[in-house]
Image (cartoon, rainbow, N blue to C red; front, side, top):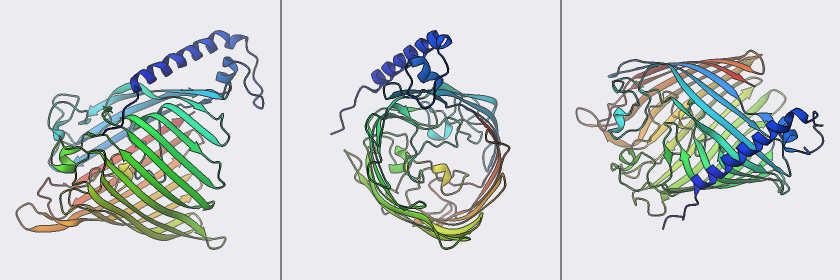
Length: 449
């Protein structure tokens, strides 16, 4: 049985109406209000608005994609997030944030769904042959929630919200893309136990980065994190998705009508252990199991692990890791549909959906910071868990290799610039759908209020 859904759209309409009412009331009375004392709770709605905090930034990005077999893509997009969160008034605050993404140059396939094959997704006719840059034109509500801190050491949010848990492998907002992923529902964060965070949530719908709103199910989230030092923690989690269609049926299970409902249970140990004033030991150990749930396809049965270690000396770090998303004998592979997958298996995004033969990613990572500059580099050896059929016959297990470079400069606390580059090189040709050589370049300018 599927969970009985709450009326998400009715809930969002009520929150929007309440938000408009509060903002209009504040606008009417703000000219008569004195500047509030930040140490004193707001005495009126207008003071709550004035004492609030901005949720506003503007991100301009140029992206170039050179992918074998497709027309080169060039995109210049501007994302505007404009929002404000009021100070608590009677222990309740309102956060409202609008989003607009404008394609200033649109020589690319933006991946917006329509009633056609997945490889031809595009909101602009004639752009199907271009490489993908999934940054569609979009205007809408990015976040809109009521927040309450009335219960000691507890934060409750009701409405549309960003969510990022642990390293965003399983639950994230995919913030790299211009249209981010957001969740509609209720979440609770409790910190009553010393050094412990307990996060639980019920989400009825998810807006994906291609602007598609998924409403045919629910996502239950439970994550408990204990910090045994300020930089080391252990987390236990359970994620229960009854969304029977997230748009990946054919890629996951060979059938668009296959029920994709699944649950994931896992444990994560992660930290940077201080050895002395100069050196830190870096380590990660994580394991998770994914199975069918709430009527999901019985082939959904796979496991995940990540093991890694390294060292940091001052502002320089170097580490080696291996991450496995296993295969169920080539019938299904471990998936992370709610995670910020751009950050994993390389930035070129050739493996946002795990091939049914699974992925074994072995990689090294180096970072360095000096002043307002930050540098990043990594290199990936990408193999399958189970051998796959190669184009032209035979079998193989080498998908390919990828390397990524990034440099960023913080001009001040408001302005950040960044250049990033990634290159994926194919090895054994995957017969089920070649994962072709791809180069990507990003130039980003971010201004935050």
